[in-house]
Length: 471
Image (cartoon, rainbow, N blue to C red; front, top):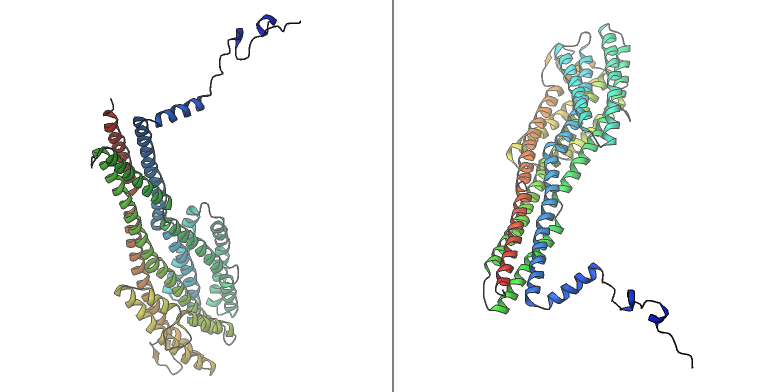
C-alpha cells in the first residue's frame, strides 16, 4: 500500500506559519480595538469610561457648533449695521442727488438768463456729492457684479450729462431756444431706460438685496446648536439618573456642575439669539423698511418737481412731463389729491414713534397743498398766462405785477425737508435696534464655548470620581 507523505516530510510548511506550527494570523488594529471595547463594556468601569468620553464629546461639539453658528450670525448683523445698511443708504442718496440735480437745473431755466447763484451751488453740490458716493460705492462693491456694472454705467454717463447741462445753460444765458432742447435731452439722459437714474436704481436694488441677505443670515435659527445642546443636556441628565439608580446617591458634584453649565449655555443660546432676532426684526420693520419707503417717496417728490419745471420749460409741448407728474403723485400720495395714500400712507403706518410720524404727517399736508397749487398753475398756463404759471412754481411777479409767495416750490421744500427729517429719525431707530441685535450675540460664542469646556470637564471629573471607587 502506498503511504501518503506528511507535509513536514514533503518539505511543504504547514498553513499558518513556517515550520508548520499553525500560528493564527494577527487581527487588524481596528478589530482589536473593537474587541477590547466590547470586553470593556461588559464591566462597569469600562461602561463609565465610555459614558464619560461620550458626554465630553457631546458637550464640546455643542460648544463648537454654537460658536460657529452664532459667529456667522454675529458677523451678518455686523454687516447689517456697518456695511450693507450704509451701502444701501448711500445708493439711495446717489439716486436722490442725481434727481435733485435734475430738478434744480430745470428750475433754474425758468428764471431765464443768468440762473441764481443758489441754483448753481445746489446743482454743483448734488453732482459732486453723487460723484463722491459713486467712488465710495466702487471701493465697497467687492463680490457684487451687478453693483460693479451699475457703478461703471454711472461713471460713464455722469460726465456726458453734465456736459449737456453746461451746453444748455450756455445757450439759455444767451437767450437761445436751443438751450431748452439741450436740457430736455439731458433730462432724457437722466431718466431714460439705461440712463443715470435707472443705473442708480439698479445699484440701490443690488445693495438692498445684500442688506436683505445679511438680515436673513443674521436671523437664521441655529437649529444644529439647539439640537446638540438639547441632546447633550439630555445625556447628562440620563447619566445622573443612571448614577442614582446604581449607587442610590442623589448628586454627583461633577455631573451636577456639568449639567448646570450645559443648561446655562443652552438657555443663553436660546434667549440671546431670540432677543437678537427680535431686535433685528424691529430694526428692519421700523428702520430699514421705513427708510426704503421714505427714500422712494423722496425720490418721487424730486421727480415730480423736475417734471413740473420741465413742463413749463417745454412751452406747450410738455404733456409727457405732466403725465409723469400725475403718475408720480399717485404713487407718492394716492389717487385722491386731498386724501392719504401711496408711499406716504405706508411711511405713516411704518413709523412707530412721534419723531417719525410727525414729519410724515407734515409731508402729507405739504403734498396735498402742492397738488392743489399745481392744478391752479396748470390751468393758468393752459389759458396762456405763462408768466403767472412760472411765478406760481418758482415765485416772483405774476402777469399783473404782484409778487407770488405761495408757490409749489414752497410746498416742495416743505415736503422734502419733512421727509428728510423722518428719514433721519428712522435711520437712528435702525442703528439703535440693529446695534442691540448685534450686542445680544456679541459674547455668546465665547461664553457658550467656555461653558461647554467647563461642562465637559465636570462630566469627566464626575465619571472619574465613580471610577475611583473601583480601585
